[in-house]
Image (cartoon, rainbow, N blue to C red; front, side, top):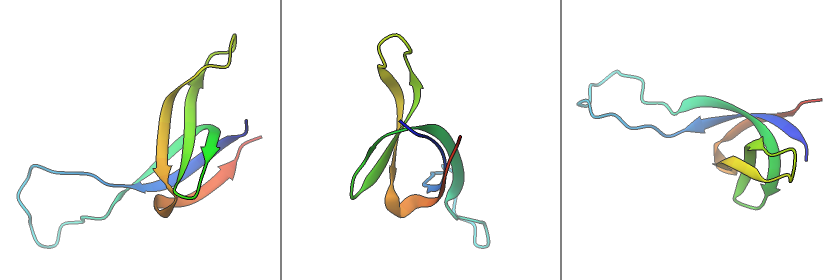
Length: 74
């Protein structure tokens, strides 16, 4: 598995009232993890894995259309 940092635009919600002029852009997030799957729609990052048996947890599923950049870490 390769380790990556992925920047992506995330949706968010607010319980406040709409105010014209506020910034309602997606939040830019950055996650670091091992790529465990890529398909036509998403990339799946694992941010935690067991060294004894390679079990993976803390998955982050990101739609490709939200990905801003990906950089492989060495």
